[in-house]
Length: 351
Ligand code: FES
Image (tube, rainbow, N blue to C red; front, side):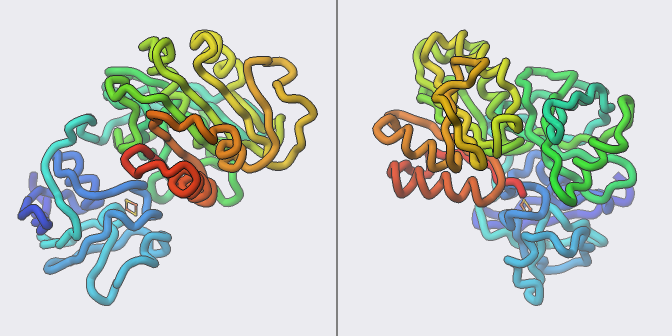
């Protein structure tokens, strides 16, 4: 289209080209045209979309993005998720870059409206977005959301699972300084327009892989796990596979989705074990007082998990999502403690 710039990507696997609107980050333009550029967070934190500008002019959007600290900026290194082109560009990416996503839909931009806002605890909100056109996603994927008046885009994992979803469900936990979260808590009204880009993320669940599932989540990291449980339960996956969920919160009153956990656990007929780990409260009993299917334990979620799992890692695919220190702790526990290989661990870090 008029006004677009041409991006040439040089990678270990050859050269590819795509067009990029000057308003779009290079990463979004590439992904939405099926170019499998490297990324994880898509929001400037992880540094995995690093590239070097060989020629051309670019504009860096979020200068203080944590991922920028890993760059050699004097050598022209950029984060593709935070950088827009001001001219035709040639960029070099230190990875293989192919075309197409064998297991995932091509991400794209679409219009949405904030539809439902429900408070689950004093600092956790469930919200839903209705879309102008349906999108397909895998259980465990996320989208980026933008609202007018707030800078940048925030990543949220879907809680629901659907093919051709007209509606996406999310959960958000209030954080100090969390712009989008504060907006939802204080100012958002049903009907507000929200721009959606996605689906994104590779920490996805595929029933045909035939593994037992270990899901470890902290706070609103539970979102993608709920999507995985939703899909697995509908497929009857726990008839033939074991499942373990470890959900870390501060205290029992911070816990949410208890009804959903109980229902999934009952439907799994004993094959799905749910443990809530309380980091700031010692628990008097072994079970939740109102939900006997849910086990309680005190401690950090990855430590509770490591103790409980010990000899139960057989044929297991592990999913981890939560704040970076929690994810790092869980990765250490799995790789060092359980000798899990990286191809058996999928994770999402968000700060
Ligand atoms: Fe760009 Fe994470 S994908 S910093």
